[in-house]
Figure (spheres, rainbow over the protein chains, first blue to last red):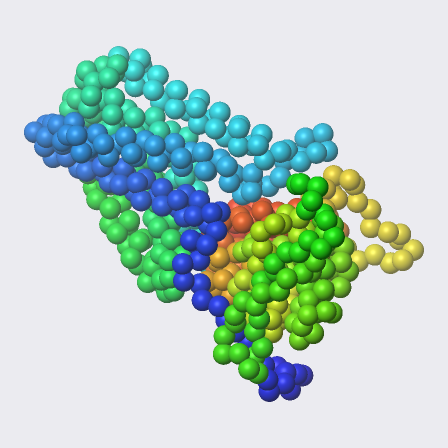
Length: 139
Length: 118
Length: 255
Ligand code: SF4
Ligand code: FES
């Protein structure tokens, strides 16, 4: 039976538009914020990329770049970026229980909160290691 | 049904997302705040000789390359999807707009790191 | 809630999205005042409207006990089952009821789920025995651990709430979507099943798992805790592995 023969002439399915869909539910607003963190992640990657290029261009170029990192604008940018990265860390591990295969412990599915907490703990540990290496090691 | 090429970009998205979630805050704080302000870090933390030595070592090169490239491709994948979310229907166009520049920037990064030498 | 709220004669305003294709050019909200009681569901409010106020109102329902999956509605903007959502959650405010988002509206609160059913038929939603057995060989045995791998995904009641929650499906109806992928995974993950190869092409396609951006609102609204977002996203990993390893894997290159 084709769709035509099965359906009567009065059928006129109404399709609703999707414009502004993400403004209609706080959950979607949060999703959008999570996705938009990418803009500052990209911007930060660009800052480092320019630093690497300046480094390749020699001492004068590199020092000028590092000097520009001390401008109020650059500092403000990095404070905002830090906040956004912290949000990214939280949101990455918040969604993690949904994205990885379930883990069963003693016959029970590991709770979402446990996985998120473990991820954030891992991030804290990794950040601590990076800071320790930069501050202590290498000397 | 055509197989999607998404796994390539998604893998980099995932690796970059995980890496930035794990060490991103510490890196931003160090390179963007602590070092420029000399807050409790060695004064020469990001000095030219030290950074040069870091980037000349093969391991240092690898770290810089992975951090910058993966952060970039992580962001690129999200931005590509966001363009679609906001109404850019053509996935092919979105890929060109976002992955194209990302590829160029990655090449530029590789060039810079290589020209720093070993 | 104050005691007086339950007094006889209490009422609540219910706004219902109406769309009668033979006379309305587009949907509009119609307001009804229905008797309120603490134990009345939104579905019962609709039944009251149809029985006593306006018999032309169309909506779907059957079991009234959250198992048939036919009474999905947008209730104050959130996909829910009408039969297990109660007026008391909104009283004394009004309740706004609409047809499930992202599906074409057929009439009033009835949506066209042809697309969903079509996708369901395509994924081989049944066990394809890994090794055929004859009756006298006995039943297929399964350990509790093997059962656990798919049990949650087998609880789906095809209510399509997750589709109404999924913006990616709304933006592009070609996307396989949450519930169907959860079912696809339910069979793939069953130790008795050997049909994974048959379902692979659908899963690996751009409109398969890769249409998902892990919004994960589907899992929030699912009335049966199926967690369809989990089914999709763990299969991204599986699909990516297959993508990269297909040439080195024994069994060779599947397209
Ligand atoms: S996965 Fe949940 S929300 Fe989706 S159709 Fe099945 S029961 Fe309904
Ligand atoms: S009427 Fe069956 S699920 Fe609500």
